[in-house]
Structure formats: structure tokens, C-alpha cells
Length: 234
Image (cartoon, rainbow, N blue to C red; front, side, top):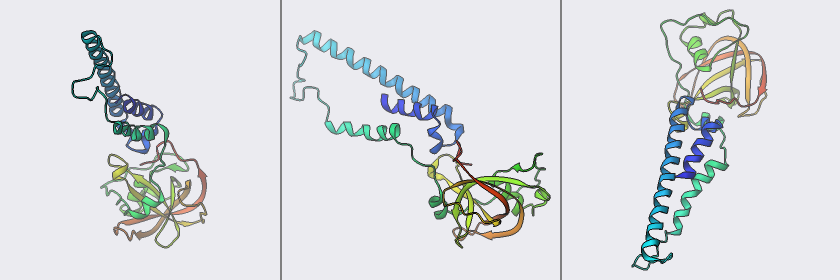
């Protein structure tokens, strides 16, 4: 419990937890880690106090429990440390192109009204927001604007690269991709590479063969490879 609670606290304070769950769960994870550490310390203190009382009563530090066990715990219990050590020592990669290729794209949300984009050129837009404006708004709120999308490269059904980002409802176990097709300037970055793509609205609309979701497209003007962002999920 002590190590597990410490591992949760460490992953929360170092942002490693963002590879597992959404950022909004940080205070709950931190609270759970602190509670586990507190419970472990109290348990250790209780056991040590009980051991001192036993030695005082019997004057025998190695007193047996009367059944031949001598108070020893099964050695297999140490295997419980394996997942804890993995959490402490290993940092798994965020879900990427393989997961995106196996799952159907998240359908963009339809809205009755899309507000104007913020000022800026290019203006940073999330993949979900761009897809909704492109598919359901017909690109009206994107007309005449240059946008910048950030995501990782995943191969499309035709082999051409697409831009994707994983969307979490709660944790990585329920992650699904939002995919945006790319036209215009070619992108030769490898799968799983993170890129900033600058472009304009494209009227082309595709279909994800996995779940038949409608896919928005972006006409690429420029792009550059970047480091994976601290928060890889949308």
C-alpha cells in the first residue's frame, strides 16, 4: 500500500498520469495516493505495536503462533510489488496510430450554432472542433481562415497519412480517435509522429471504414514535426 500510494503520487506530480486518465482527475488521484500512504503508515505502526506487545508478553522475540507458522507471510505476496514497480519505473507511451487504426473515428459533434473563431492567423483549433465545423457547418465558420491542428500521424484506409488524436471519456481504456484527412502539401512524417499542421478548410468529406463515421479534411499548407505534447489526449 505504501509503495502503491507513493507510485500514484509520483505519477500525478510528474504528469505521467496523463498517459492513463484525463487531466481533470489529478486531484482525485492525488487524494487516493495520500490516503493509501496514510493507511499504510497506520497499518505498519499498528503491526509494530502489536509485535512489541507480543514480545513483552512472552519474552521470546521469535515466538511461534502455536500452529507452526511463526507469523511468516507467503512469499508469493512479494509478487504484488510487480505492478507497483512497473508503475514507478516504466512510462508507457500514449495511445497512438495502432489504436487509431483499430477504432472508428469519433463522430464530430453537431451544433446549432458555431461561434466565430478567435482572432489569430493561424488560429489553433482542436480536431473535434474543426471536424464539427467542417462536416456540419459546411466550413462557413472556417471560410477565409487559416487554422493550425495538432495531432499524430496515422495511416488512412488508402495508405495516405491522416491526422489523429485520441479522445478519452475517462481513461485510456475507453480512448477513441478523432481523425482528420489531409490534402494539399504532402506530409512524409512517419506514423505516430506528432505534427503541427497549418492549412485551410477543405470541402472533401470521407468515411471511416471502421465505423462509417464522417471524416473532415484539411488542405495542408505547411507542417512541422514536434515533440509529443504534455497532454496527448483530446
